[in-house]
Length: 449
Image (cartoon, rainbow, N blue to C red; front, side, top):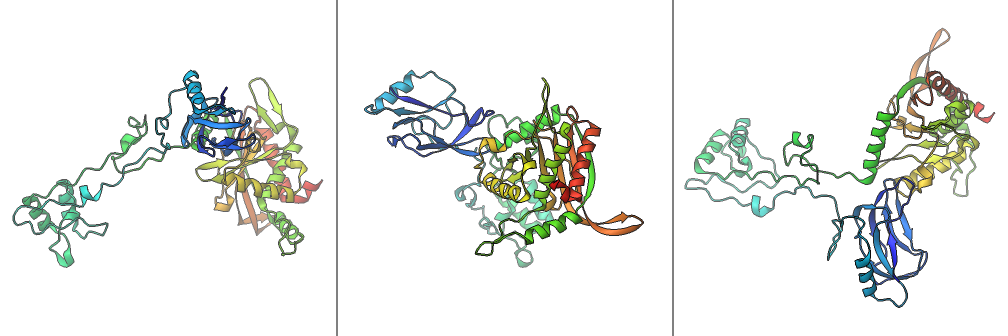
């Protein structure tokens, strides 16, 4: 009997996914462990392995199809000795699970983003009807070159609905002037073709925002799964999590000095490459992990049934990738040295940008860090990513005048803002956590105690 191949659930929260690519074609032999397809979730692209052996009988969902529900039948695997007709019969007998996808059919195309309007072809734009007698001032449409025309001439042409580029100017250096436009109107110049309407995805035609803009003045970039999930989660967070914010400045002079000494002392391999290179962000991760251990009541997650108090400091770190961001988690960061944290973050960041993280590598965590300091941002407030109760927004380290005793000194300062879920961490507790973080940043040796 044929074996059904269903859309897998690649994470606990996955409801739909994109069937990005089939790696087996109909008729191919399949062995247990072979990679059948690549599935895109909201966070990563993952490979699906075959569990059984057989022959790929029929592919029911074309590659490139978006929003394929979990457990939907996507292909049929034939057992040894079965022919293609068994797959056909199996498909006919299978209960319908969802409306057919746009990519299905007798010759299923790869489903792509909804098309946007393309420029009219040269046959519709590049050809100009010959004017009536005396129309020798009409020239072919300009091929993307600059059109020299007076503002008045442009305005008259626009008011009368034709492309001024079809005219030949009689002014200095071929400039199109008022008399050229008036003569063209008299001679009967064809009006410019109307801009082709943008092909909108279903449901967008009545969108209030879309209606604010002139048709043809924009293109539509459909939301991918990641952007949709980010929008849903951040909206949910701001609507359901009561945020409040605490900010302070940290002195980085000691940290920067320690960082230089650590990196200079790193052992080197035969090629002279250091075994590690610790960044300021690595210190920030370690300091936040230690602060949560020092203030354990802030190492929490809110649930309706009770408070979750975490034993370890699992620190999520926001990594920007094309189209969104991922937050890989450094597990038990309080137990790890700076070199290990640095190595893990480099690996996570590289695989996050390639969308190759496994779900267990970016789900969960007890807090998160969002660092925009490397982009020159001085301070900002980040949105909490549930189930976290806090997120630390880190600004740039910069030289500032600071009062030390009775004198003013120039020192490197970094502004940080803690966003807090007031249900789990109130003001005093949040202030205690942020103060502990500051103490570890300003005296890195405390991380060793």
